[in-house]
Image 1 (cartoon, chains in turn yellow, cyan):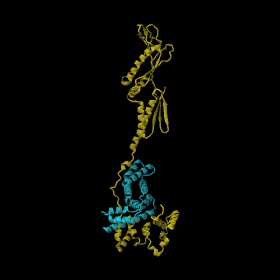
Image 2 (cartoon, each protein chain N blue to C red):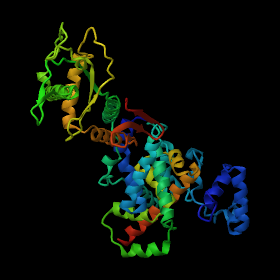
Image 3 (cartoon, rainbow over the protein chains, first blue to last red):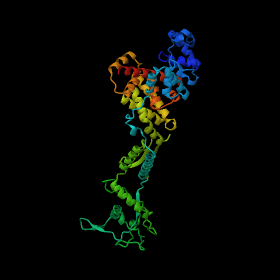
Image 4 (cartoon, each protein chain N blue to C red):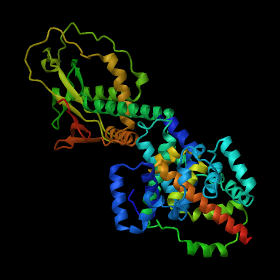
Length: 353
Length: 161
């Protein structure tokens, strides 16, 4: 605190008590040099008998830590004793001495009584109105927040993984063509239906069954071992239908909402050899059937991308983070990659081709 | 300090701090702001301040925040005896508490603060010195001079009545 005319008395008292450090003492002397009217309050000035009675430095006795050290209660220190009494720092002997002084000076009783009534009492009707806003959430709420954080993160990661790891629903279909249907042309001549057209029709029927099974998971039958015919089917001319024995790989594109099912058929190059044993390959069919059924029913109701963005938004809201989800698409608008970004890291993945 | 202890501090001390600030600033809205700032500062350092030191920390922070606000508002005015003496003769009081409240409001800010901390909260001279940044001797002098003024004010009013 800077020495000023308002607090000079305090510094002078500290100086007289020897409580001023050298730096403050130097500041005090500098202040007195600039304001000589206060020099009369210095101890040397106080020691002058004729000036001592005019000294107006209040509270000097009060500053003394032990009132018992004061030899007697006088007119000069009477009020200081009264204040000390109201402050509760007088012992019984000092109070007795004060009582003795008042007994001999009745006019002092009024002053003593005034000091006794000066203690302030707090107005308890004044209360702070915003306590509820000042309080912080307790452990239970923090636990809920932590759980929300974990659940939000788990949901986001799960959705991201589902989007990235959505493998093509690949099934390998084989079959035989017991008889090649024939169609008639305009001239009335019949000709066999091309094998590819026949295969497409079979595949369409198979896909329709799968879609129906996806929509109604309860109706999915257990996969039954399919038997391989012992004899190679022949057409009406008695020749084996080599083309129909070639495996066909069909890729079912998982439809988005309100999009029709599209089927892409890939025909491997014909080898011309008749396989010894032909099987219907359904890898982990039973396990995947329920998952696919669930995914199918989910896909009917949800747009994965919208769900992921909603999850990320909820995650950001709950955790006050700034996660971002972005995707890359090919020229046809098909999803080819995803990226989950934070302020420091980016996790990205590309769709398996 | 735990969150529960912090919330307990809100229950225990916010009213006292609010009264202390309000009596000094005479502006309820600013007093609320000071209390809010004070608890925000405590929350920032909630892990550093122990429960035992919380009250002292709160009053110290509130006091210095109040001083900053008052300085900012340029309301650090010294007591003008002539102006207030004139007001005293024009004002009517209904009881001792009102007279004391009026007298306290006329005290210089330092004296008012130390007397309030002494009477309202029962702080020792050492604690008040710690809160206000004054020396213990300065606190005693301010209390002495404040009591003297209150006594003279009360005496003059009673003489008028």
